[in-house]
Image (cartoon, rainbow, N blue to C red; front, side, top):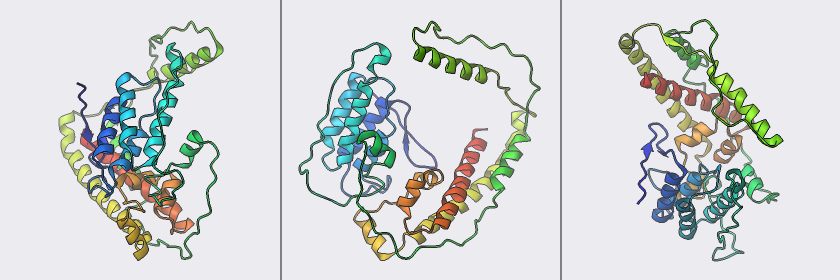
Length: 330
């Protein structure tokens, strides 16, 4: 019997694990235990969570027998969400195509993606139940979308940030003051622990890239602390309290921004029917680098507000959280 362990991310409140097999087990549990009502913890239904987990299961080699069985189980349990069936079938086909990497014959295996009705059009959650544009191209190829009418009244966010633009950089500079970097010295680089006798151009090119990466990694200088770790407790506690308070202010500010952009009566009713996503911390962080997520979450925002909200606010919040974690680890 396989046993998997999961951690809860302290800020994002998402389940984490290291192996694809453990993720597939969690995806099967979510697909089986989920209902049509979004979970209070996950802010989405079980099968919508399954889609998010499967996105983190892209294989680099053929699936093992247990992983393949988990995918089949997920497909059989996902009678509510077509995206789960399609994603499971796509992952299995993608893994089978990589059999040549380990000297195996390609296995042609398929999973049925047929649903109860093939011609019924049902409104679904655009962020949780639909594929992203790059996923559509990868799985389906060219996809033609129907035109969707946009909002006639755009929302402007004019409030200033509660945190200075250079605050994150100032914290990083303060952390750097505790470190010292020795001058560059000749460093012996160990040989690459791989067989370099490639028989084709593709293998030789991959080995050359690995060699460059290997040499670059081992040539990096390692910083050292200027003072004893025990003497850093006081300064780090002060920094931690400061960064944590600013991060809380930033999170509150971002919630208010998205609430303003999605606060109409129509949006409220669509949230109740799960036709619009309930925003999570992960969504806010993703908006910093994924314009498609920001556009889906807040379509009424003006282009100026989208640029300001996504680039400045999301990045500031994400980097502040990273600094919080960095200080805690010290």
